[in-house]
Image 1: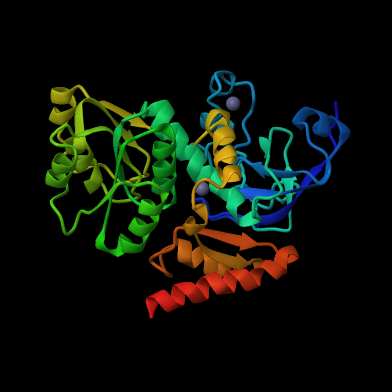
Image 2: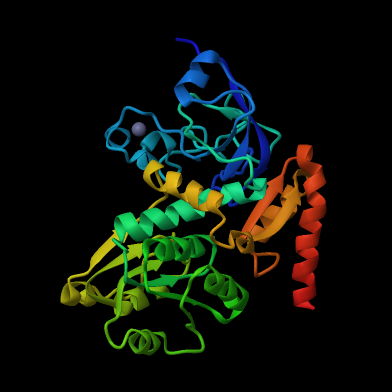
Length: 357
Ligand SMILES: [Zn+2]
Ligand SMILES: [Zn+2]
């Protein structure tokens, strides 16, 4: 059974670099139109030429225990944490030396491997909104499937970046009545976005006694679920254990790259906490995320802080790397084919500039 090469014509692709350094086309929050597709692939995916789709970053093997149990996000064949570049397949992370080179979204065309996971997305959704399916799907899986958040839940979300905001949307959608977002003084603008998406409280952990504040807000009941979405710093983990009620769930969603100093496990023991690591999303969360985006129920455009034309991908990457605007939430790169949208990108940046001034 031979499949013809399937190609996706990119409208725009989302953010975040992988950790590999070899030459590759980055961009793994991807949306585009089917540019060319073989008969067999079209049948398998239920798509035809011209259909608009988003593509998950995973390219799983389809045969291992993780894949067969629906946990394809953890498939070794697509896991950058296990293998060296070129030894695993994942959009935005495969070197261009691996044929046919087009493995990322910062490009006019992206190759669709036979194991790609595609979802149709409605034509009325602006292209730059499509890539938000990843942070929102992550939020849905982490909050509802892993955390069990539902009607009346109290949650604390540590970190108001794109994934923290995805958790806000998911918690709100699931019926949580108290959604607390913590962050730093520099996060003031992200806090605003969090509130517009459904956060009921925001706490600046540098300025306020966060544990006392959570106790106050919840009248001593503390949080049912706490998710640490902050990257790098390990301090939020100690706070997370304090924010959580007895039998609550603590979710670790941020990569730390270093051990937690003087980690005290007594809170886990004393409160019988469940501590869960989470990585990414799957069909059960991506499908509803797309419905949320299509519905227009949330002002998700507030998460889109920067758009760049393809030629300025370097600038986009340095902003992601923290060298640009501190208020960046979700950045997108538009292939040259979509040049007409760049005017809009400049307007967004000009607006950000006005606020800075
Ligand atoms: Zn990402
Ligand atoms: Zn697999």
